[in-house]
Length: 155
Ligand code: HEM
Image (cartoon, rainbow, N blue to C red):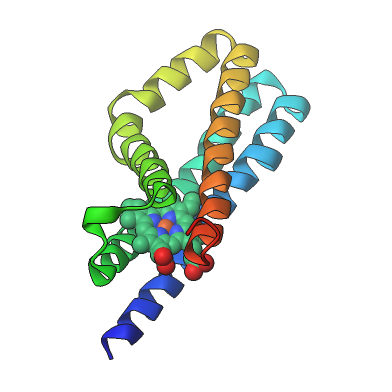
């Protein structure tokens, strides 16, 4: 029975990751490039804030689901004392997004980007794109290392 809970946690973990990292991939490879290349400067900021603002709720919810299911699995496996490097990578990625979504964004990041984009939209969206590419890259690394590690490649 307990093992079923572990398997369910694993399935929810992946559900969370699909909704979260999939959304980050869309914002990074489709939304930001489209806005940068095809919008007039006046439209860029409002369109980005509207769309990313909508995604923010889904990102928060799926980050929570991923974290809860991940820590539950660690607890079930009794693995706190010997966490594999690829699980540290997952926790690292999760911690960055949790900080950005729940702390930095509401505290200052939103205001900072808004002000920067009004002053120099081209540069602000370039910085935004670089930040998203970095975040997406480490997230995808965590996905690849996670599947490989969970299925024994590193042990
Ligand atoms: C608090 C954050 C997280 C914790 C505590 C955590 C923990 C875990 C644990 C314990 C496993 C099972 C390992 C095993 O079966 O040996 C796992 C699997 C996995 N996690 Fe995470 N994780 C977290 C966040 C993430 C993130 C952010 C990603 C991706 C960006 C991720 C991707 C995966 C993947 C792809 C698997 C493999 C599932 C499988 O093939 O069965 N995790 N995680």
